[in-house]
Image (cartoon, rainbow, N blue to C red; front, side):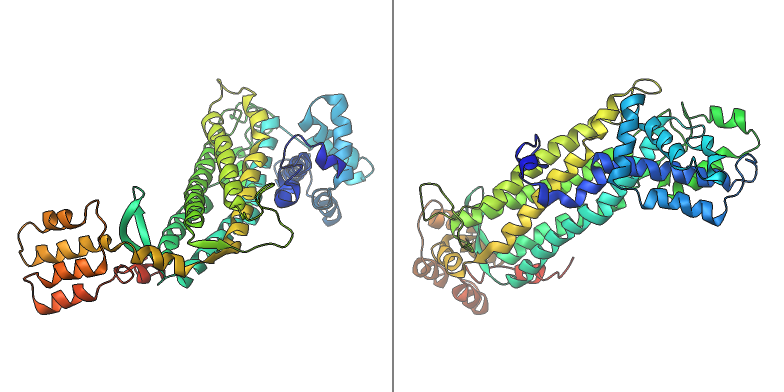
Length: 456
């Protein structure tokens, strides 16, 4: 508790439990663990290359020992790496020294320990480590969280598919829709962007100090380093980038950041609409025992979950925007400005995850108020002016738009006055009867079908 109270970032303090799924991935521990994994896998690949005779094929026991260094890496091991870093003042070199130290008593591995980090620049290890972290966070945390919100919205769209409500364009009364149709709009938009986020290729490279395999080729000219590099990167589950400077240029991170921003922006739009519908009384919020809505007004049940989500989506997008704009830019073959920025990847994803959790909570508290929606509809018969003037157009009546404008624009109109107008129209009886039977609640087009997924 004391540690949380003293945390500088609310993600590590007030909201720590709500972003816990990202902590083992993007924390300093997570980064070190990913580096250890990359270094271990690189040594294993070198040992599997027959032309690198100084690194013989590993025995099953030696390979298992290396596997354990990666899979069983824990906080104590990470603390040892940090202790070494206190001397080296270099975080990646500390990992290399930790691995050499870990195998010094293993006869087979100690003999080849100088091939840890062989021909690598720190960025070879770092870019692959961050790629693994982003891949894990996307697959295991962010995509499932986005899907949960999408499914909540989808279930609501179907449940309220036929629940008529008054639309508001420019804040003014407009042709009716259904609440389910409005939720379905968000589902369709979010699904497209979630799929685009899932489709962003996550790249990696391992080609040395300036991307030319200089050290690799001078040491082992007989090895096809491009092919080995490709096989290594793809074996990690990443997409091989064949052409880089010292750094993998991070274009894919910009793509992922922009995809996340689009998801977040759609959900900001949704949060604001939900806030508005709660304000109109179209939704009530379930009361939580013991909860206080206002320090002075006891009656209040504020839409705090949607406000919290909107704020945190905004923070996430501000960070993602900087990541996307900054990371693909590096002076000449490399500068270090990306290093400190990359350490904030977890913060960006963290605010997104926090917002998604708040939105899930907010959606789960909503109770639709059909009586309030019906009351608004029944007080807005002017919205049927569109229907009447459009039918009048079909049957060639003069100035249909202008007639309805004179009847309805800026004026109150009720069912009786509208039906009196329709009764006097010179149109076929079936068309007239359809207009006479029409109500604001029934004038919803195919909103119900759309809310249930018809046509998309």
